[in-house]
Amino acid sequence: MGFSFVLKRGIFMKNSIIFEYINTREKYDNNFRKSIQNMYAKNARFSGFLIRLIVSLLAFFVKPKPGSIKYFFWGNKYTEIITSLSKSEVCVIGGPKQLLFCLKHRIKFIPCMRMWDVLLLSIVNNMEDNTGKLDKLIGNLSSKIDKFKSYKSVLVVDNDSLPMQRSVITAARQANLDEIICIQDGLFQSKSPKEFFHGWFSDRFFVINEIQKQLLIDKGMDEKKIHVMGFHKSTYKPKRPLSKANDRKVCFLGQPWLKYGDKQGLRYLEIVASLSDSLRELGYLIYYKPHPWENQLALLDNKFDGVYKGSLENAIEEYDVFISITSTALLEVAASGRIAIQVYDDVFDCDDMSIYPNIYTVYFASKNFSNDLMYLIIKENENDDIEMGQSVIERFRKGLE
Image (cartoon, rainbow, N blue to C red):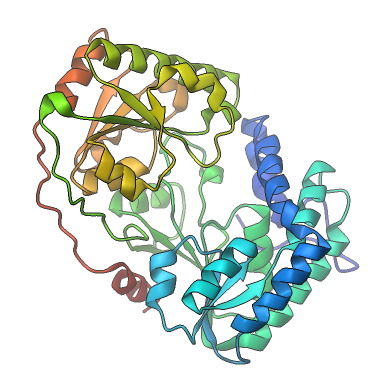
């Protein structure tokens, strides 16, 4: 993938690289554009004049000083890294949620909300309209970044593929920031086309582990741009020990497969139903922790004994066994000393996650599915000694060297 894009009278063309990822994914998944459209529609609610006015007024209290910012972050996903940096050198770009975060932690803030509405309309209209407005908004953001940047400033994003992130990256490049850094926030699967992966549009890509690094290299990414940073937050060490085998509480980590087509969605429901029946027959209750993108929980209501909407850290404290299909959270669960189980099925084109430390895999197609599941649920914990290693901020800084 290249970084060049076509311009005409200062307007992004239909084939702009801003929208490249959606166009490519749509070739493989007819529902992908609709999924992104729905997500952007939620964020576009904050593009109204009154909300933007209120945010702009409050942003005055956390406005950066010219020439002071070394680290620009799109959003506040990487909270632990952001709050570990010098408050005078870090700035978050975003909307109302990010503003509240910045006010709470006294971190600098740049509003960026109008772009959601413009990008949404462009996606809905198949990139035919509003690209002139988008070009102007990118220019406005670029001017702000240029005003507040210091020597060798960087922009950090959670992905470098979706239209908003690529718009912010384009603004940062126009402001001549030193580097664009993308931090991996979810596992990639070897069976997926390379176009599904993030990291191509940024200058550096900080990844979760060596396995993911090699996967990216195999897909054609330059090894020099990849840095193995590990997770973007510290391993959670639960206060409560793992319960005895017969007393263990089970939590299913949901994923938004219902958004991605009938084949995967229907299989997802089938696995959930079978898993629920198997666990209840074995005498276990099963709880459900939905993915933030899931919006069809009504289809799953009768399959679980309860829905858990707290943080993953609180869930790790509450539950002993975690089950999912491809969730990256299984790595965090395993690292925290809980039992992490993947239900593997070919429909999802996923990798066998037992290649990762302390993750176990059961095959949905197996005739012994229930027995295999039971064996893992009552398994003795082999990961009592949690190795914390370097801090997240140390690993982040090392990647900047």
